[in-house]
Length: 389
Ligand code: RFL
Image 1 (cartoon, rainbow, N blue to C red):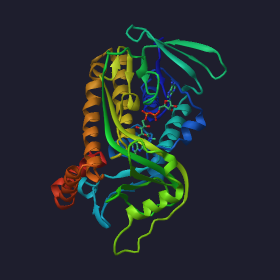
Image 2 (cartoon, rainbow, N blue to C red; image 1 turned 180 degrees about the vertical axis):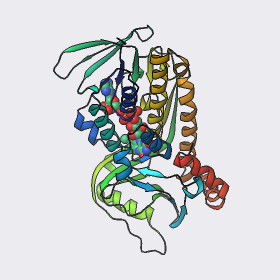
Image 3 (cartoon, helix red, strand yellow; image 1 turned 60 degrees about the vertical axis):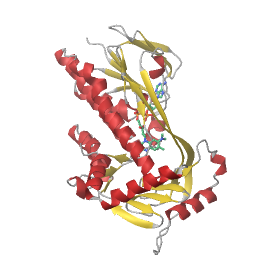
Image 4 (cartoon, protein in one colour; image 1 turned 90 degrees about the horizontal axis):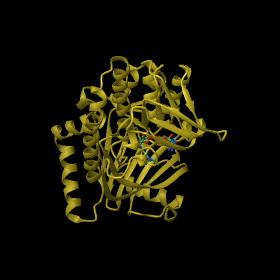
């Protein structure tokens, strides 16, 4: 019998691969460090691009998402207290965003995989990779009951996020790594507050950026631009709310921000990181294990799902037709989209943040004015933002 693919990590990337391999009759085993409850309740991303939603649909994985998500067609740029709506759906043949929290995507993917008889081991520790350059690599780990286990496999899918073990198992110098610090800090807040808006708001204020993102009818995510390396202890809840009220305020309007209990507050490192190529022998890196991006533009989870589909297709061709073309092309195909998304995210970061350098701030302002005034510029933004291609 064929050796399985070992998938390390049960986030969006790992579970998507697991489902697609299961559908393609390729044996696989998923190893996850956390508990089932941990992965099903971990709040992170919230926005599925049009193409990610279509991907889930294509593979019969979108039933609950399509009934329970909210579709979004427009966003708002709030500049110095004045609102400018950008209807990206109208500019991209009616394509929409689907607001569906990442933990729900994970919950659905896990349930489908288990319903299909999938093999997943939770609470594994000390995962180690061996012989990635050989025809038969292997993975060993300590299972939840303390036993050391080992499995020979055909391929290893490194889906264990940015801080996982798979990328770190690659010897120094065997892959190139590109890192960029965006020079901006974000205070990320999750609050049990119903949304105060129907559209995502990107607000540019003299004191810095503020974002109002949507998650559900009872929970919202907010972002505040803060100095790099800011200490979260400098931000008691009252200060968070007063700063959000100030930066999101609308002139000549009775719009108000609804407050709620803050359930998560942390300072995000606004950085990007890309590994090239996204493989080392029979170890393939997917999602955040291979690349991270700022949350601006909402691309991270979508890139992870795209990697998963490209990888699973390549593995299926290899298992069933002995074709290595897909595997050979995997990294280049994924990286094209990754770099395009990095460029877009960086462009958006520059668009709405107050830059310490007044000249660069002015450039951002000019770019924003152009986006608001030019239909061509707005259409180009819309295409990339909604994930139309
Ligand atoms: P994940 O989701 O990090 O999953 C990795 C899994 O691997 C497990 N793991 C291990 N398992 C076994 N052994 C080990 N040694 C392991 N080490 C780790 C972990 O427990 C976990 O279950 O990676 P994946 O699948 O690549 O998915 C990537 C996405 O999670 C990520 O890109 C997004 O969350 C980024 N992101 C956003 N993306 C969007 O598309 N739209 C958004 O609006 C958006 N907002 C965000 C975000 C990320 C954020 N944070 C917290 C960084 C907002 C925030 C605040």
